[in-house]
Length: 215
Image (cartoon, rainbow, N blue to C red; front, side, top):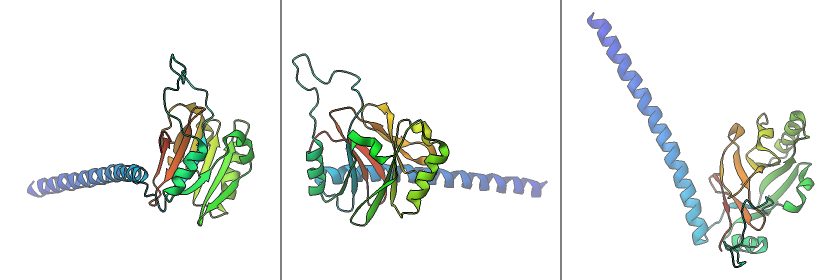
């Protein structure tokens, strides 16, 4: 009986250790990501963005509410794409620019390079088959890109696609925000017309997104 009791106690202790280890790993990951996001915000605010990669594009979504007040003035300060490009370059970031006026220009996989960092971009719509979509990202995989971006008419189209890092979701509009999507790809909402979005990739490859409101 004593042997059985000891075995049970050992199993309980072992299980408790496993739970503590998993909890610790979870806390570390959450805290680590939070710190990385905070570090990105600090570096952006202080203008120290060496080794950062920034992808800029203008919003195309229809505003959900009026952008002007009763007096005809804009409710929020806006920043032009040209000003955002200059600002991030002055901060030391490598800047990539996507042409929101011609997403069809990315129907075929495109690769852009800045200082040895390569991003692949593909535009996806509802008429594309899963086979065609996967083939596009397979092609990018052979071109040694560091990050892949899907400009999708709907993020759900990417559920079965491998090799996608970032999804710009044209079906979801509003204030730019990001989060995990299919296959852990980072999903970004399409910003409204009159705004500029920035997808920021930190030196440690942590991705975040924001609306450029002030410089």
